[in-house]
Length: 364
Image (cartoon, rainbow, N blue to C red; front, side, top):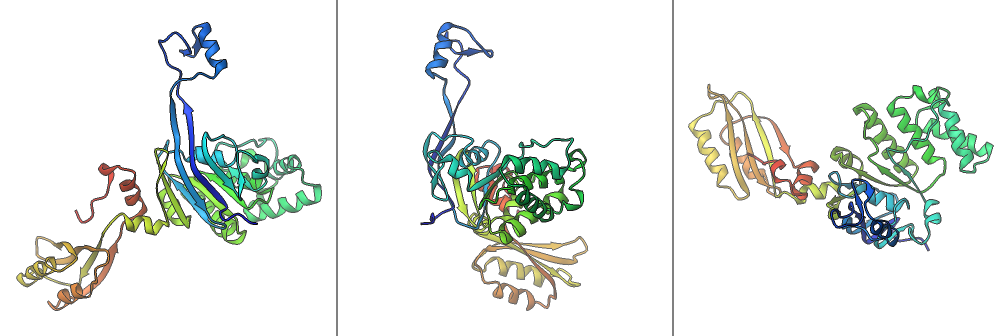
């Protein structure tokens, strides 16, 4: 029976020990063991206080989704990825990949997923891209014919065919990241884990890599992708759902649009006029608009010569704009353009993670 969720965690907790206490006659001091009791404490497993990297994380990722985990540095994103790919053992709770317990069945788990971590390299600089992939194919146990077909497919898939016989040292950062993806895809696993997939890439290479993951890997190959990132544009552009992780806890989990709209009750729309002069009638119109239900603020834009350039109106996000536009047009104003300014995922992220000093002020 297939698992209900491709990835699932239940009350997941991971603790890391801090440096051992100092000045108490045991443990490490300045990187050295100061007493015989310190040696015994190491063998007995006696350590200093702990820091909780993950504090009761509950997560569910459905088959075929691109699921993003966002958070500031130190939020626990990389720890979560490493637990799922069996590199780190959690202390409490449960974690499952395709219904397999990552603690009890790590070998079976690794048959279902592949991780692409930014710090992982392992390529020989003296070999070509193709030769590097052939080396790893042999390590993975692929037969020669199967390996050649798979490598040819992956080089074409990532657009590296023309550079396959170039030395790895001649590859750009973007090409190196693509070769890393090729290596991860030598084994055709249904789940892919990415930790900061575009970190260190220039904007063009980053966009190309995002397109590769979204359009080809997820949509065409039908793989489930879980990625951790602090790139908010990346998350909004790529992900079906996101979880915001802050200080080891998930503080929001939904679609990117729902998260950014839920955090704010307002939106701002800007109306630009054609050849208008600000008059007493327009001043009365502003006063009328300010009294309308759902309107929180009106700011006219007029220069010193009283050219009426436009008007900015803050309203509830569910407000019907028809009465507002009627009040504007009945004064004879001709509208050139209407733009709606809505909260971004960055606005929501700053609000959720508790950084009010960096939060955007709407209509201020």
